[in-house]
Amino acid sequence: MNIRFFKLHLLVVAAILLQLGVTRAMAEDKGIIDWAALNPDIKGATFVKSSKECVECHEEYIRTYAMTKMGRALPDGGCESCHGPMSKHLDAPRQKPALVVSQKNLAPENSSAICTQCHQAGPQVNWKTSIHAAVGNTCTDCHNIMSMDDPVRNKLTQTQVCFKCHQDKRAASLRRSRHPVREGKVVCSNCHNPHGSPGRTNLAKNTVNETCYQCHAEKRGPFLWEHQPVREECTICHDPHGSTHYRMLKVAPPYLCEECHNPGPGGHPAQLRSGAEAVPPGPTNNSRYTLIKGCVNCHSQIHGSNHPSGVRLMR
Image: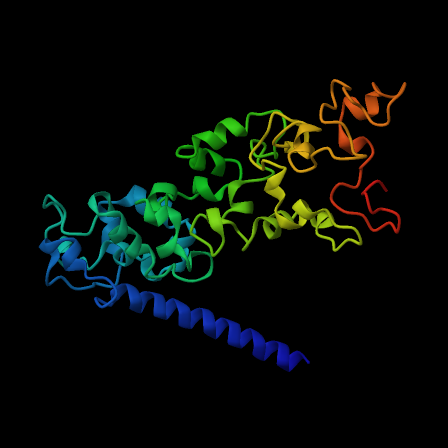
């Protein structure tokens, strides 16, 4: 058993080393990135395969970058992985503009192409077809790769990066009923994959419900008695970004329920809060249990029930 465990570890280490070698080879392969097309001045430049010379001028950047995840993972710091072959730049380090590829002036698709040399699997596999890529965003719009603490990867600061563009969601996060986003307990990437996904609105899972079930597993079911909108999609009733109504409901009950449950023969009245035409007639017309808080006073198992007599989700 120990021998098998040791062999498994050897295979994992070998795979990591192979990936590092492939990563470097990809960065140096002009078939992946045509560096001269990004900066014609470096045409004919070659890879020096070392970042030691960069320290002489860029000591502060290198010191910080060396502590980042990418700085530790890439061979020799990996400056050429993002800035292209540097032989010409080292021959004329003071020339302006510099004889390297700077992402500051690149088109979004070219800037992202440099990153996707390596980041093309896992969460980034759908980047090219993502909403963010389609509207012209690039990786450096959200990531600060030269920083030890990339704000978008920190739960306490990630939302501030997202809110720079998604200001309507910033407003929603200030409503009284919301997820604990501002406290850093829930962040945008818990529900969304900003790099793209098969689901709509860059959802982390394929559907809204699958995404919600990551935390709200008790709502998954299956139940003996189902509530159809619950099975269909949580956002029929809830606004996950925040609401002025309790439990992030889109509309205050009973009006929310009445969007589907219109009054009929033997049913509840159309004007529950006023008590007009209450059923059954008599002294209970103005019952606060029917007229004030709404349907869940009686239909408490609104997400589904497993009780044999729970056909109306009352127990």
